Image (tube, rainbow over all chains, first blue to last red; front, side, top):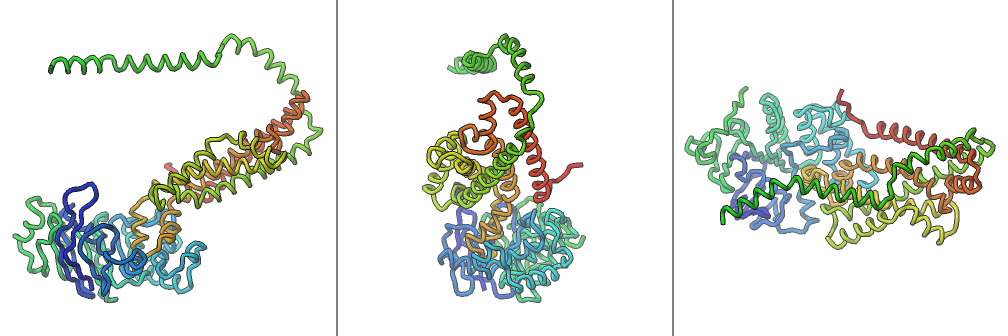
Length: 255
Length: 268
């Protein structure tokens, strides 16, 4: 369960708040999609949920703990339960697929074992199992730089899965992919989360995708929540309110 | 007032190129004047140079065995000096990288240490260590180690400052500790650069190690100095042939290692 109370964040060297007065309650196993134009605060909100950004006002409860107000060490522990998927995949390009996926197991490893590179048999087993789930079991020893965009995002999902997370935050996970791959990746992510009871919070730029994949939609405009409800309850007026007049939100999810 | 400003701007733009050109000419005139450069002396000196080379031929291979042993000693100095320097520089460089350093104080301290180590030439370090531990390869190794620590430390820390912060965020988001982020998020990104710099310094250090011999810090340089002082020009040529062959060999070997470890992408 994620409970966000009166959350505000302003970036250094920027006078305008990136997110303002956010109050949000996300239930376990929920599939929530955050929509909004570029710069509306989607990424900021996701990065705040696992405290990748510091110096914010308010609180974010992950279960019992307020991640914004615990020690750095405790924040690491909480982060371990939250997987994150990024728009640019953020993998180590020169390393092999398995090495990247094993990074998801770091929370279970001591610093000493990390320095000497000793992962347990169980870690390899779970990393391989995660690769199998995303359909890349044969790719274990390939280098990331030799993979396509869609394959890279699958590796990133496998890295997150090997963490065995309770929550997955996906920050525009399909923005760098073509429409066919967009659907493939979103289907995969949704299926995995439903099967494993993982709470999924995704930020998406395109409305059609949000409607198709989310069971609940939150619309952000200038850092504030301007819509929160089921996809079917989203009216044209709401859409206009979220995106403004620019018609930059449309892409056909059924391509 | 408006017109005066405009006139100033006009003059500034018109004469800007001329003033820059004039400045460059003055700097070069000053530098050349101070270095006694003389084409006349250069051309006149050719017969002496030819005579010097003539006296070197044919090379004298009588002491080849001894020279080869000393050349190997020089290589050993380069290997130990470069490796020790790289090993010391590696952990320190993380403390001297702006994006990782625990605080500004430590950052400045380590950076200053690197600058001192790097700023003093290897030969000067050689002289210092010869007076400290006596003649032989050991002071040479120390001189190389200190200089390489400074040079590689600086390069390593600057490479660390250029890593992709988004990848670091991805590793942090897995719940990794600070040390784990460094080992699994930062190090893999800078590893190819580190290997490149370390190999470059290995090549470089073999050449430097020969010079270190000239100040008594072991290796083939000491043989070169002895033969030159005794006017054994034919032996000097033998030593030069050994040195050049070994430099070429090391360059090829490190290029091979570099390609094996770091896959070089081809654009063909």
